[in-house]
Image 1 (cartoon, one colour):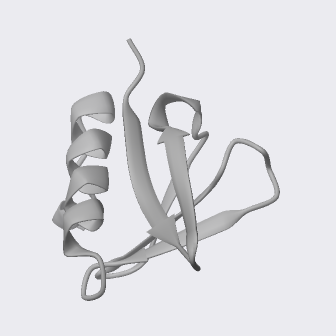
Image 2 (spheres, one colour; image 1 turned 90 degrees about the horizontal axis):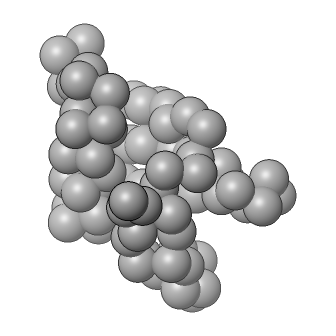
Amino acid sequence: MSFWIKLTYERNVYVIDLDRVAAFCQISKGRLSFVVPDGETTIVIHQQTDAETYQKLLDYIEKATGQSLDEG
């Protein structure tokens, strides 16, 4: 079963199947990035500006991989 998330990024609303995202990158503490499956759009989520989506992504990554990005 797919895990979908809805988010607003640069005035656009995205509904993304996170199971299709190939990789997530923790740029720095408090910033996550990933490429949308279309291969053309990179989204960067900042903890300070979108704490809810940031936490959902961390929870998804931990559930899907068993790895936590917060552990370092």
